[in-house]
Length: 295
Image (cartoon, rainbow, N blue to C red; front, side, top):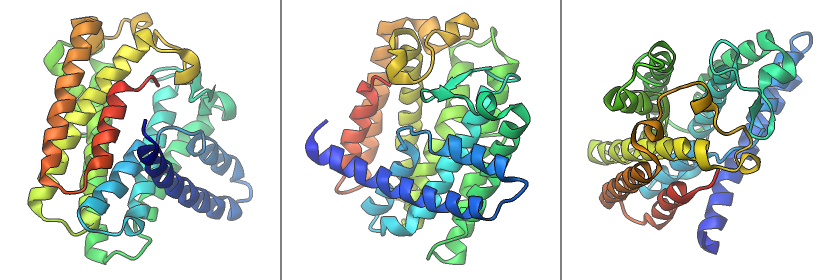
């Protein structure tokens, strides 16, 4: 990781963290008897993570000629929805994971009912957050439409349904469709929302969507590899959970070496999609960083 890339990554993730903190301070200050659920929201939202989705939103806004500050509410909304999905994924009725980002999962720390409600509250707070900021009402509506599409039955939630309903029955085609919805949909929204916030045209939005589609598949395949080969201390959660639950993954169907090669091919295709934009050195570095990541 070169110094300039690291500095830019820290700058964008820092912008996101500060705005998220401001949002949660506002929520916490308005609570009384319901404070526990707000504390659970803040607990999960501030647990760290790579902030990749907000970073993509802010950077795609920049390469499309916009002001990243204007896209910050949308970027934060994406992180709220990502966090809501992690809280719900960890619940006993889903993946039943006790650890997340090196800390007890939300339902372990606050109880299952509060965790469920904290996820619901983050989903709703995300839409409220998009409505803030300096963008026009028409642009905010376009952002909300994109976020709704990415989150719904043909996006992240639909992917989770396939993951749970067809466990033990998926071939590679179904698995990749599930990855495209469960992981890729929110990444696509992140890139497209950055373009929308900048007022970009259809050609650039389509290129951003193609980039994110390839990136999302590569990202999930690397996750599958790390579930086998990763360091629990770096990942902040136990490894081997997929094989322990006898879930199909790209690695279980294709092996580690073939999976690495596929992730590399998808990454190259994502990089090619960036040719539609200018000043993409940071995005290229980020794409390669995600391919080579260890957590």
